[in-house]
Length: 233
View 1: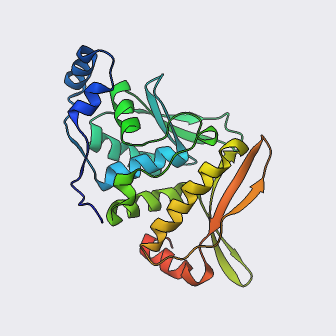
View 2: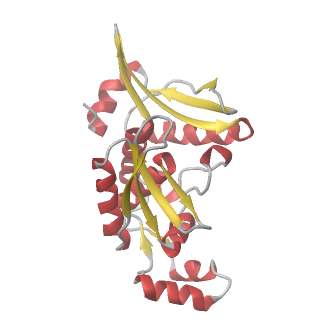
View 3: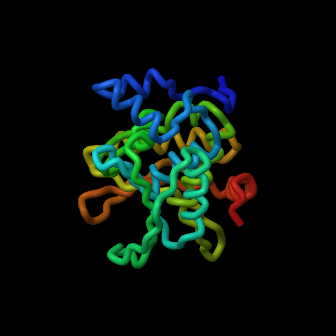
């Protein structure tokens, strides 16, 4: 059963109950003008997806970031975040990235970080933990679309070989979290079926730094459908 886009995914009571002392939760709500209930929407699904694949969320520091090799899509995500939560972050250049210069858009706001975690956004080092797609996203086709499109913008590999195109999706996991990574990719594969996009079996390969690459490809017969549906030229 698919839920409507107006599904309530976080109530005020759930937010308040996540604090040890109620007075701190009430102060956070008032200071940040947080409105409850938090309602599912495409912007929020995209924010959760970007943090999951090309971002970072840490509750202890009360910070979440979006990272990319260029600024335009970071500015899009910053605008979505401002629309969703009414907060403004800071853009900075990251010159220590081992893959070259990149850019980071950082938000520092502990209550919003708490909300993101409560609605299912993974926290900490994602290679070392297991997580699944939040139910409120995978149970709705529109939200699944927003999540998948952002996911492939972050982690999708697109290239051409002499006789065919290739589209691959991959994540890294420590070996102890391999099963969790496989389960997560199987959820993405199931979500793609909602759009009549077929995928290959999951492939596991090794890489340095004690992590494994877990991936699947879009089946050759579905590449044109995938590109058309998700607007990848």
